[in-house]
Image (cartoon, rainbow, N blue to C red):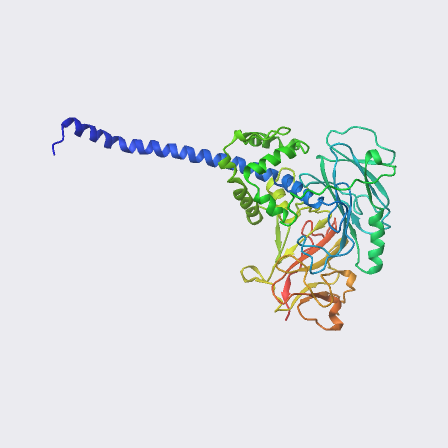
Length: 477
């Protein structure tokens, strides 16, 4: 085979050009990859930003999808009045409590204000936090803030102006969606249940136009298309990127971003979201948007391990950054995912513990062992409301036990040791009749604990600044 000088020269030229061609092609691929990553990152930030608002809306749909008030659901503008504590068969929500009875409602203050009337609680501890659509607690009437006397509030929406009746205090919501998540302390005895039921029945919520008049709320409308079985978080996470951002854009019309969110607006616009307008699906690549949900939720949960404002003390994990988030969008999204409806730290702290022992030697709690949590004399959890220690199984549900006790607190008349210290006995079998006042029954297998401090001491010693330290839970000797 004879190769001409011209052909040889052309071949050598092509060979020499190959590295330059490869470099140019790699550069083009990198530009595409970088562009894709940048688009995905911007869309992910928008997803994290909107996660609380979308979750609140999906929660509202499920909780209000009822024709009339039921045990745990009620139409918009009507109270759910929980009449008793859940038992071990309850599976509606995780981490239920056995300390307060809920009195909750969802309202839409976009069209007109709603008026909340709270009766005289006669010294009983209570709080009625009001959450906006972004999960921020914008007001919290209750024992800590307003006292226990009778009180009346008008919750007004963004941009509302008008005159309120005499004696009605205005609470302005930043959004049209409002969730009132009332809690009233109850010991759980038949007599105290009856007393709290009367207080719940005296709580009223009416539109401003009906205030002072006889008013019968309309029947609720049940939407059969709403999924009433799948957990809300799973429903939110199952939305495609396009579905998610379309819903977010719709919700932003009545629930505007805060002034501090201004730097987020260009990122929203880049994927077709302009507050007050419909979603523009042509602004971004749908393939990129539909990759966003999984990537973003993984980033939210990773924040729990790497960036969340959480304190770790003696095997306990807790945060003092809840209920009000500013522009800390990851913290807000994380709390939405793991504890929707969280209070301000001044109202409640919820330390959690899954293991006993130091560091790498920590082992998961197991009913095969006996544990003790010891409070030195005078050092029980410092709370002006109340404190309690609650037992949960691995799924964060109550544990069935022979004395139907799901939490321990001072209402059990805890017995002190000779030195004045108090031991909480955490085990599967009864420690004996003489010690059952201090017994928190555990399952035979794995379990986890939650310590609740409602209205933690504002001054030292307090968990708020770490001057009161949670004692460890140790294996009993």
